[in-house]
Length: 435
Image 1 (cartoon, rainbow, N blue to C red):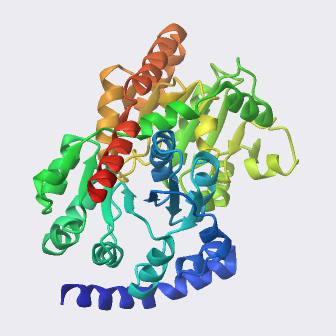
Image 2 (cartoon, rainbow, N blue to C red):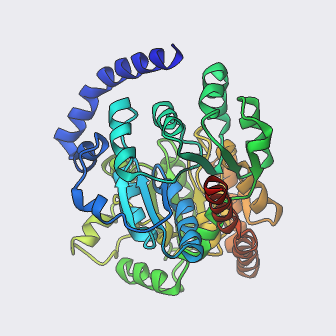
């Protein structure tokens, strides 16, 4: 009965959301690549490519989850060279990232919509020995079907943010049933473990195993990547650059005010603004223009050959560039934190050896915040005045800036190893299944 009610609610939600997605497709082209595949309409050659054994299906929703899944895929490939490893994503941006990072995957597909006949069709075609979800991606019909088909289900790099936990807790009775379909759960931290146990997971299924994103970020850092983006944006190693990454509405104006007040002392400084949602690129450009800045260029214009970024301010309005752009920063502000959005991933700039400023709203990244704060490489500010004072202090002490940035880089390296642990968990489950 509970799944019957879930499917009724899912149908109602789909009917309400359909006009929005149709409009998005018509106006922007978004979702066109993925819609058919999400209904199980995938090219036959994808399934023909799924050769090898054992067959492991790993799911990573979007870009962030792919960053964690990619090193797990690599670790599995090293231990099981003959395995068929299928990686799925839910978003088109995640699909692009998967093709870039997870080169050891046998096949990359879209994850199906949680409609019973669709998930059964796709699961039957992929025919995995084990299904692995990255982070907390609980789709009831999919997991129920895996249980019926006797497919092992494992969660890796599990995490539950405070906001998600509040929502899950309101319907704990339902999620307890869903979690019963999950055979093993590996989570990032003790806090994540406590939260998922309180939702009804059996304690014997839980292990605390760390964050695989450390492995992915450490592996991605390379001088070649930095050189490529520096050349494209016409930024020399000695140029001072303030990078504001993953900003949300309300944060760009704060950063612009800080930047304006820094210019008298650092007239050569450039500002790179990277909104969290690239579709805000035009709106961010308007905010910059209203703030009195005329020297503006977008990354899409640079990529289109319209300039060499001589302008003071660069607005990044294309996806997939955030990580490499952090390599150019003298100092970083990471958004989603001065406004109540729970923060963004501060590990990415840290992997490049950068000191990171962020606001107080870091609920979704508390463990990352605590690691960087403990070494003085992650600095909390509550408003523009504090951000300005902090940036000035760091810029006036280049040796301290370099020292703290290096400590951040070492912290990323020191926390590696989770990907191999998660790969071990998957391999152990496969062996137990065969036994």
